[in-house]
Length: 349
Ligand SMILES: C[S@@+](CC[C@H](N)C(=O)[O-])C[C@H]1O[C@@H](n2cnc3c(N)ncnc32)[C@H](O)[C@@H]1O
Image 1 (cartoon, rainbow, N blue to C red):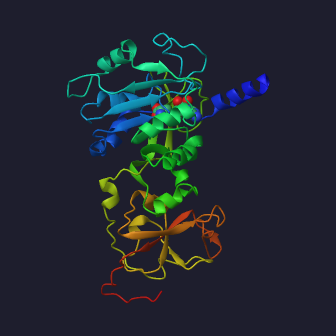
Image 2: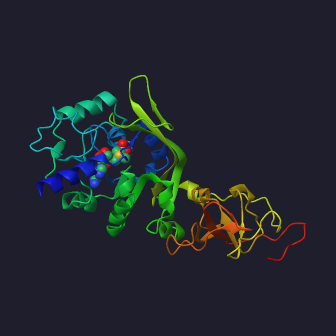
Image 3: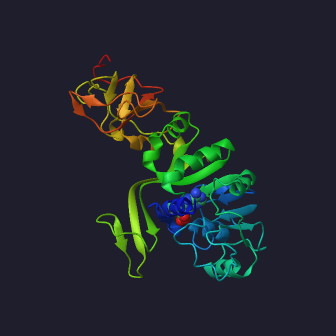
């Protein structure tokens, strides 16, 4: 049994998904959401208060956002845990801890880094948890129940689990994830029903990675201070907090013709190569690149499904090929109000 537990702990500890978010990434995105935080309890549940820039951001901006309460829970198996032991008297190895704060200053300003560091080190705001701080533990779920908005970058391997936990308790959220998650059967219907949408930064994102991370040929570097970094080309923010981006319409300038917009071999829909090529006058179903999700406006289009292998899940309707040639994954959309064709011949569908 002891062996089994040790192996399990080792497996828990060796997942290659500890990507630490930069302060700038958080500040840039969060600047679009300020109105949502007034008098709210924010939970960052994959966030070591000493290491996480989510925790730092919300502490620094606690009063300007008019937060009610901030809770950050850390995970005892985190590869960056441990640097803080001199400030926390930990009774057990691998225990998580919690920062739980309601009010710490009368000042209505953005607090300095020094002020935040002093607060973390000297005020009694951080306590040891009973368990390891796994966001799925009862102890952490109790914090989630008390929270209004969950904001974090979870391990990508647990993204689905975190989303389903948040949905079970009907909470608001703003999470960093990998765009691959958009077509998961747990996430796609949320996008389709306009219950979740992507935020602003979509694509490139750079992250600090722990010292023990293995070097890689691409998207990996070490800076002059010895800090290891990795970047992703397909990162995203996923949220159910309303933002202006989702109300912007895509300006459609092209009109349909059967040469530029051929139909798929196995499904009655046209292929559109680029978002800017979406014709304004096509009434049927159109297969468009997955990046549409970050430009999607539910007043302009309906999402019908996805086209990848034709078998990934119930939303994956067919494998996109044209004349036998495979086409990259597509999102299937329909224009809610196609415009009449201007000037030129109107081609029948
Ligand atoms: C991708 S890192 C991001 C950390 C931080 N949220 C940030 O953005 O900088 C994910 C963090 O979640 C922690 N973690 C891993 N499994 C967890 C779990 N089951 N529950 C809570 N945290 C977990 C990892 O140790 C790591 O610190």
